[in-house]
Length: 162
Image (cartoon, rainbow, N blue to C red; front, top):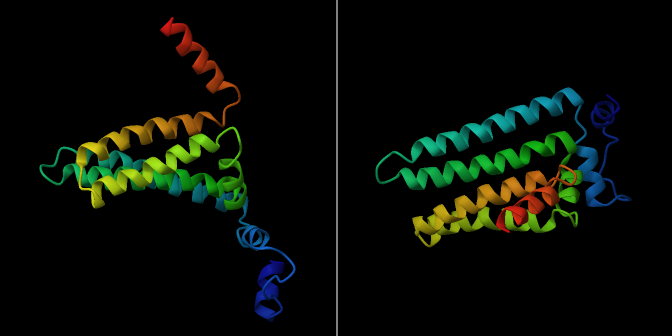
């Protein structure tokens, strides 16, 4: 309410003493209910686009292209949905943590490479490979938020390989 009063009275100017991250964090202060609603809406859009993309695979000729577009957009929406819960600055800091920096880099690279393979290189086989890598990278990234789960999975895999 204080922010609204300051804006309406004209006293809310640019924050010259703070940095850009502080200004972005202050601008993104939403109530908890609004954050949860934003998360749910963005996540549902993401899941819907991903499922719709899989359904588009069965359309002749343009199905693969539509799958790639919808699936990648769905993953981006699902990733952005968590920014509503944490806030964008905290989410970006957590994405760049040393425990998940590699997973974040691979995930974002696969998102970009999927779109490049579909539109720029026009190689749908390569685009489907990058979609599969998107799934694996997104899963590995998501598991990075659960303490010690990735170590346990790696131990299980090494035990199964022996």
